[in-house]
Length: 260
Image (cartoon, rainbow, N blue to C red):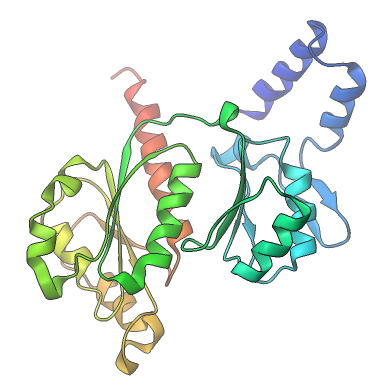
């Protein structure tokens, strides 16, 4: 939905008596962005511009800052997410906002409005090379689900035991976009690239012995992959991989509705 369409919907709601002029004025007041205290400015327009709402980076914010931002956002979008939230910080947030759901593996706090949850076309397959890669892979999986996409998970199928991957070819075959998270030498995305007929988003993780350099080695390996149709995001960036996969599917959906 574009900004003019959203504005038109708001004015129509006032004309039909669905909301009061006073309520509409409050919406218009922060139609672009809304200040929260002296530490944040919420980008309410991001969904209108990009298709996905703003997400809170939780790692370097206090629980009080996160709860204030989530409170300001929760009535304006189908989901409010905060990523990289520790269990202790999540507990503090839930004491203030009991409706917050927390996934400790993905390290994501979320307030979800199921009535507004979009149902988007496309299946995102998400693979992890090892169990140690699961926090990054699950961050991608949960982000994609909270954005309204169907997700199929396949964990611990790294190249050290390639038969685990080959015996689950259906996950690769059924996916419209694949996200592959791997540490160590980062070989899994290249192998998957030789089997898949869809875009692949490789996510290097900071898992491995000293020579992996906290993800630099898998990052360089993925960037140098000989597999075509493979793109790479930053180290441990499961969230960014999920949004990129979502944008690929949204673009494909838009193109399918256009005449040749």
